[in-house]
Image (cartoon, rainbow, N blue to C red; front, side, top):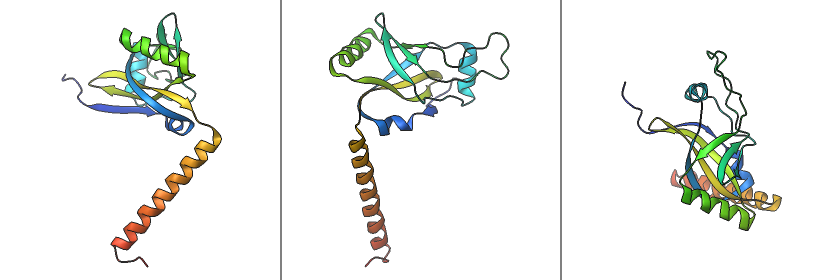
Length: 159
């Protein structure tokens, strides 16, 4: 059977972009069991309340929900278990250093298959305050209104 090509997104964390200011992103592999991979291939996962954390010089993903595989037997996995993230040592050290010095957090943005391998996109992020969130919403609404007006003017329906 030929290997998969390209990128197939399984789950994305839309709330993370709303709650955090994304500073940098990294692609990490995950240490998964067989039934977890099968459940991901079925397109079932949730990144709500998930975060990455350092323990003993390694990074782990907490709170990611991969439901049990329906055709699995006694070998099935626990849905919310802690999963080890696979990154190069240099990237791990850089992430750990930045989270310790600047009060930043590591938040997963997407889980996807890249050329057949399960990957997670981790973001180095800083939490937004509520007024920052309101400013972003107002800015997005204004841009949408400008685009709408330009579209109407282009069609000859404007003022």
